[in-house]
Image (cartoon, rainbow, N blue to C red; front, side, top):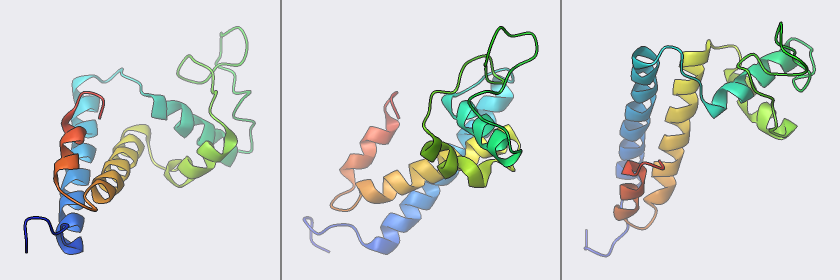
Length: 129
């Protein structure tokens, strides 16, 4: 392999799987370290569950709240196609659903970033990742 040659697909796939496992494991750790924490994904998960229950995800009312609010204390502003993308994870409890979503997202991104070289993976280590 020459220094300018792009990484082989098999190595990219292995790296993506490893990164996905680390990302998913991180969310399990985060849930353990901060059991009351919420994420942006929680709105999508709750909306997808409402869809499966035949409810309008934009009108889910939390008991005691003045008006439509999600079960986590904030409104759902994401468009319906976003909820449809999360629908396969709606049957999971919230922590495993977060972990699977994060693992899948990081794994796909890692695979795509390494199309030409390995160095773009450094962006995954940033605070914004």
